Image (spheres, rainbow, N blue to C red):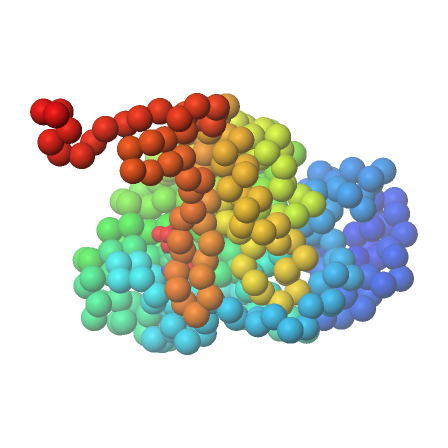
Length: 346
Ligand SMILES: *Cc1c(COP(=O)(O)O)cnc(C)c1O
């Protein structure tokens, strides 16, 4: 696979000239995108293209200098390097800082600003993480994230997963990877077969737009699913990309048709250089309202915000009523629903 490390080269591949201001954005937040993902962009309308907006630099990234780079306070919740322990029963393990694409809306942009890159996890760091997990039997799930863990060479990935899976209190491993979306052939038959043999292993991927659900992407998910790995999807609600109920409906329908369960839809975190993608929480609630009468509950993800200061993920729902009076799903009439004890005998 051919990868592009400059906006100018990526734009040239699309037959376009890069705007002059792109260079200044790249100097702060580098470009990294491959042939496959570039091929999903419509060059005729690249400025408004939902695929291009996820991959190509935008001057708006430099406009916001006041927001925090780490509003989720991840750095403060690392008891050992690379391990984020915020909730009682589950942790995040950062396997590498490398990805197959630098998503412009990345909430860990601090890790790669100015060309920095978190190295692949070392033997020593893995041993320290495993030691911490062994000493905390209340932890039952490890979310292997990064970066993208599928950037690791297969033997390293295998060793990492086997080390975690060998811990007696770990029941579930969740691999967080955008590979099916940005580099589908990297989800090799070998990786899929290995994941299928690890008990309790789930795969969480990250589609944001229906145009990303190509035959190649569907085949990558299919390899995992046929190997016995459940695949879920975590999307981000992105202004100018997918903040449209019709677009998201198409995405979620395509995902359930390939047996990928829409799991989360996140509002953009208030991270520096990313906030121009934010829609406002109300927009997410409006979209859920639109879905309620139209879309199978299998296709509807949980809409959530990840609160600053390590407050965690909070799910939000449109309200349909309370105290025994509720709107129907079309919100056209109010219907009584008696539940209080004693009412039956009155
Ligand atoms: C998101 C996250 C998790 C997983 O939370 P779920 O709601 O189970 O998806 C775990 N730890 C941290 C630090 C997280 O940010």
